[in-house]
Image 1 (cartoon, helix red, strand yellow):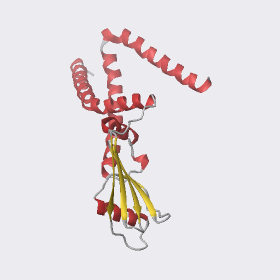
Image 2: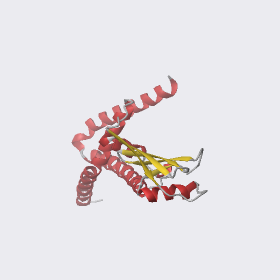
Image 3: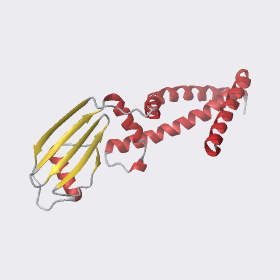
Image 4: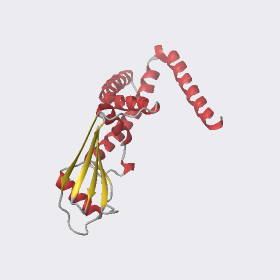
Length: 201
């Protein structure tokens, strides 16, 4: 490869490394904040709670997904749904989660009414929700969660790209090779030491 070609590849890689790094910085910030929060066993406290009862109309003998769909349609609710419409003692419970809010709907089939308890966890709760819903392995049923799963996967691939291009840029910059080698060696040594300590201590 000629000197001009090498210089062109370096310039192109440097710009792409810089701009993709800036692009994913908000996503990395979300995971960084939520990881610190979770690592210290802190849970977002509800900042607001509300509860109410709403009359609904349900067909006799309805259950399962048909019951869940009917209740959500009548209440106009959407989100990540937990609850399969199993009826016990004439009741079923449906949980609807969205970033920052959780609604628990207790359906009384006999009285034809739904009791809704809404809990708001604010910004930190929203960030934690996004952290716990990173991919499609959770089998999401809400379109927004599915989209976030694909987006999170994309951020992982971009992070891998930044790692590879970062190593390439370091190798090209002769003035930084010695310092970079020391930092890289220190990072590898620290990583290996921590893994060995976890496995054998």
